[in-house]
Amino acid sequence: MTASKQTDGNLRHHFLVASPWLADPRFHGGVIYLCEHSEEGALGLMINQPLDIHLGEILEQLDMHGGELDLPVFTGGPVQPERGFVLHSPGQQWQSTALVTDDVLLTTSRDILESIGRDEGPDEFLVALGYSGWGEGQLEEELGSNAWLTCPASTDILFRTPVSQRYEAVLRLIGVDLNQLSDSVGHA
Image 1 (tube, rainbow, N blue to C red):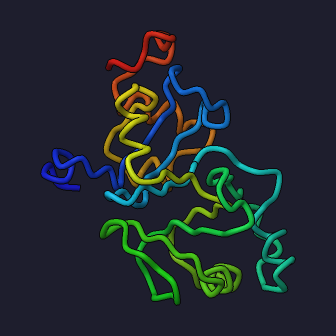
Image 2: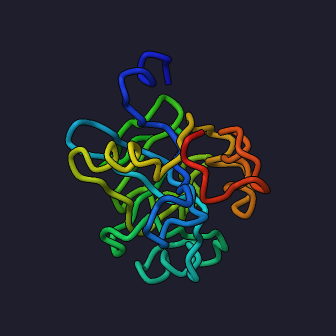
Image 3: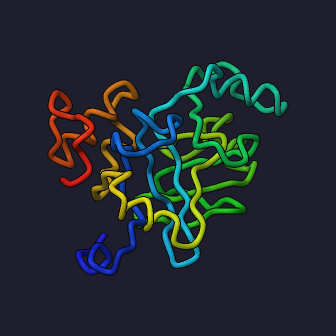
């Protein structure tokens, strides 16, 4: 992400962390990776809230190879929880892939799951069900009321940091000490 993207208000490829000012408890302790942010709205995926289902179980349900894969599947957010999303590193092309950055892509087509099940998928990936979405001006309004803390995203945190450490890692990236996080946060 270039500095100009930051100054024009586009938060694509940024992390969001709920501040204590955010009223929605579904996002407390969650880290959201923003895949899209424009005048029309925003779309992101929570990257640290695993579901009680593993990728292998989903692949088996879809009659695909890879039932032995013991990898977490995340709740991406409360919108369309039946819909799958795969954040991943570059590699081969799949049917429905959007470029987030040169290092992160978002695919929503079934063919990437087939590739992952055959061990032919991208080197790094994260699978989520559902997404976090904001309509036109909604995220900006929430940011204006200090509901979210933001910082440029890191692919190291996105793909290589253990799930249980992602929240603290993003807070460190923002410069927030978890021990000092209180209801007064939001003006950082």
